[in-house]
Amino acid sequence: MILLYPLTTEKAIKAIEAENKIMFVVDRRANKPEIAKEFEKTFNAKVEKVNTMIRKNKKIAIIKLKPETPASDIAAKLGII
Image (tube, rainbow, N blue to C red):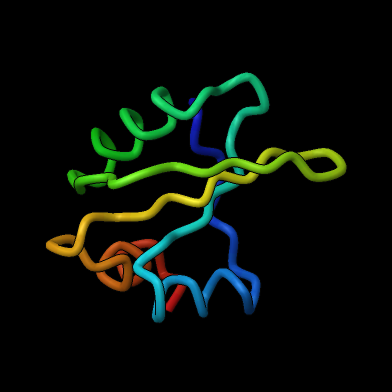
């Protein structure tokens, strides 16, 4: 399992609403193409690009979705907003 759980910080919520991005904590060994493929398969959504950053003990993926797939819909499915 590559996608561990969605990030629910204030910054993550703003990214969902303003930039059509959703943030997930992911497996530290996962690369960008693997993250995009897993997200598309799990949520049936088109990914435009993936950025990653490594923090103290976790890797965070910032997934930008294509305009035809609103991040707010996926966030609602997950119960974030």
